[in-house]
Length: 214
Image (cartoon, rainbow, N blue to C red; front, side, top):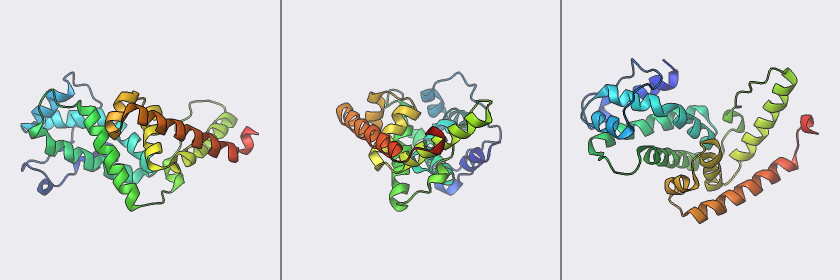
């Protein structure tokens, strides 16, 4: 079981509404055909398998999102743990037809990331990591790695709301309407944030092109 999954699973019982603490001893890739609402309502009734299915389904994306927003892998795991603790706590009160679960979850993740970023003003750029490069050429891999480091560093230096808007829209590929709902802004305000973010990102990348790109 991945370390991040074990960490999410290790929620102390004292922190939960119910005595039973969900364990992910059988965590695996999501293969449960049931929808999020059904799984969440079952989890609220104490079905830990349903809870584990929800975690398995959403954990990879939550971790990726949190890592890009915070720029720190360890903090991303903490954010994921806190987010899924809230899922466990919220599940008894969840009603089908409420806000879409993924939208609610991503809003929780964004808010947790923002709280952590405010407590830790400077994020280590190196911690953002590099996306995997499937190219077989070593030279191509080096060029891509250098470019990705520069992009990750430039994204990490964006103002908080611009960075969040960019991550949710381009990395997570959510619609403008979904991102606006998650961030609690209008679609036009989101579009304005994206325009400023793209402009700032282009400026940062144009200032110091890597040697490989020259």
